[in-house]
Length: 151
Image (cartoon, rainbow, N blue to C red; front, side, top):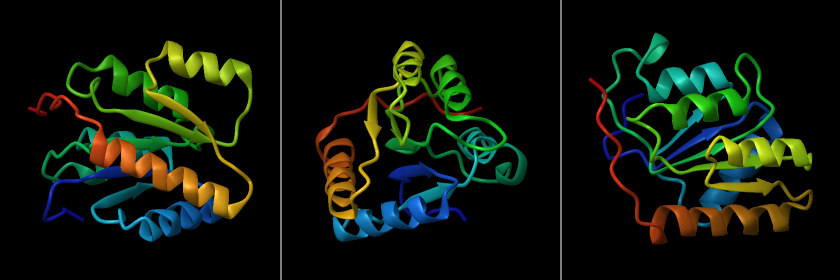
């Protein structure tokens, strides 16, 4: 799918329930436009770097990436490391949206350059409020530097 308008958000989530809750919360906040979903880390990297199944897609970086930590194929820390290690994508804000409260995951995420680390609340209303605040801040308030285009 090639969006008609600039991509706003890349949501990387493998858990179908968490994915649906996040999408519902974004819709409730009226920020559900121009979202691309990746269900594992490999798909996220292919999408961002226009590789694999996304090789023919128009290069268009999201304004923000919501990234789960525990993902199949390529975990969130590896995705983060690749994004922040590439000069073309290092300025894309990445928010770790995870259920992990492990201090080691938090520390490693910040060492790799994550912009924010949010632990998913268990209660849907709290979760919806957190996602709404995330969307409002990262998509409407935050000013970003345009990433370098892909070749």
